Length: 323
Image (cartoon, rainbow, N blue to C red; front, side, top):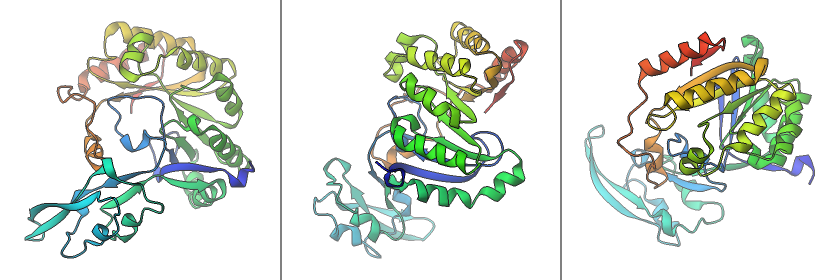
């Protein structure tokens, strides 16, 4: 397939991003991930196909709209609850969406009629040219920040490998700095093939014990650790990231193993970022009609513990920060 015919399934393009690599960046989020992290704060990134989303608070009610009710041949959209709006000081008859019987109609007509944006589709197909045209609008911000560029994220961008490879090649040809945010869960040959076109990898390590990794996340970690070593040997640069999850990977034993592994990668590791677990993404599951798999009993990560872990990494000579 020609490069200009390739299409990637993207669920968001975020400009002026300052947390996804050095400088001011544009982050392109590809849809689909082979891992099943229960703490994932972006459930819209997980599935490899377009899917509907419903944000109840944006629905203005069937009396003022209700067009989506007429556009659903499967009966997935029906009358929902009658609720009092403190803001508008009136009752609003919302709709209800049954995602289980949604027919995924071609063109998603219900979303096109929903002008308030309560009903929307997660995921849009883009060509390389379309993505690059959007990115070029942000080049002045990269130049002003001195070290900005584009971050390809997900989901897992290596799961849409032909598109991701073609995109990073094109970006490098345009002289744009490229970061790849990856779980590392991909065939080693793919990692090494794309490495020459990536300026820095934002590389996730979630747990050092493979069985624990498989039990909670759904896949083992041997290939992830192997790929990190292969990239280091190939001269790649890293920002190593670890989400800190209470009761999962915050033990002394796991943290020591994590620290030693980062040290084993040598000068390839520019920064180690610790990402304290939070529950800010829980509301996104409701919009997708899913239940967040993370138990309600798991609290946010204790700030003092994270700061202590950062200091431990710094004492080992690693540049460590809280992300």
